Length: 110
Image 1: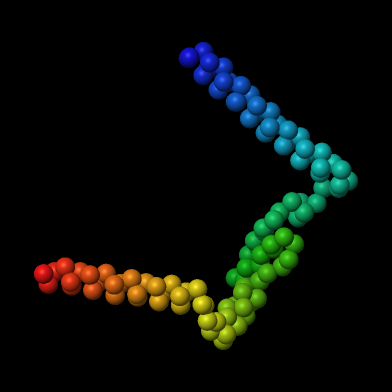
Image 2: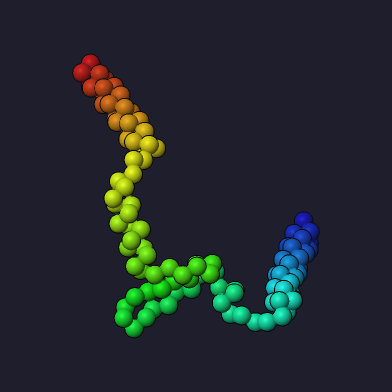
């Protein structure tokens, strides 16, 4: 049994190593097929801090600054959006609390 486990784990390790090497090889060849090496193309998320203290981020090639985030935050505060799921959860929670408090009073009174 020990030999079987040893051989199986060795085989799994060898296959895992082969998959990792294959992924690395495929990535290298995909970069070569593009014909150029653009470092920004491979970054899904990049953050740059300017000297003025502002932070600019790039997410999948789209520029986002702290001013944009603050504007969106203000818009969300103005909307004061009603969240139906949250309200339903609060209602269910209050109902369960009432039921269990009633049961606790019923049990403790006897």
